[in-house]
Amino acid sequence: MYLTEIKSGKDFEVKIKSLDDDDYKKISKAQYYFNWKTEKGNNVYKLVLKDEVLGLLSCVHYKNEKRIEIRLLAVSKENRGKSKKYERITGTLIAFACKEAMKKYGIEGCVSLVPKTILKGHYMTCYGMLDAGRQVFLEGQSLLDILKEYEL
View (cartoon, rainbow, N blue to C red):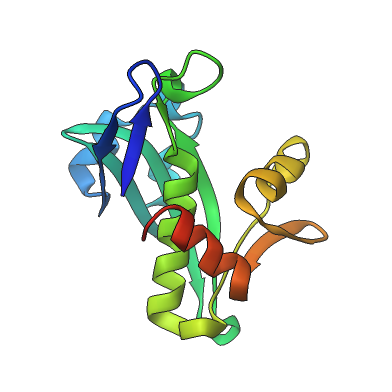
């Protein structure tokens, strides 16, 4: 897994790890848009470059549906918009959820999320997500495509 620094074009290896209790003290709503303490009961992960947290992901597993729902996904403030430092953060987090779905449910695994209305088309265009009305999702070939794209 890697991110690309926009200024230099260099790739940097990143890791995705489970969030631990100490991390919640360091994560602010101003930096990541949400109060992440409310997600403690879910599977919450951080995307880390060296010791810097660049993105966060909260997931819920629906075993009977063979589906992982992305409840929250956030990129650090300095990595949003036109002045962002790194590319590929969101895609890498989505691909990580897909990898987890494949591990748990095999080829029948699915990853979904309920996007803000204005982002629905973005998720479909940029990440190959499919329209399911209120939700967008990845399964089958679209899930495999994002894993290939983000090398997970």
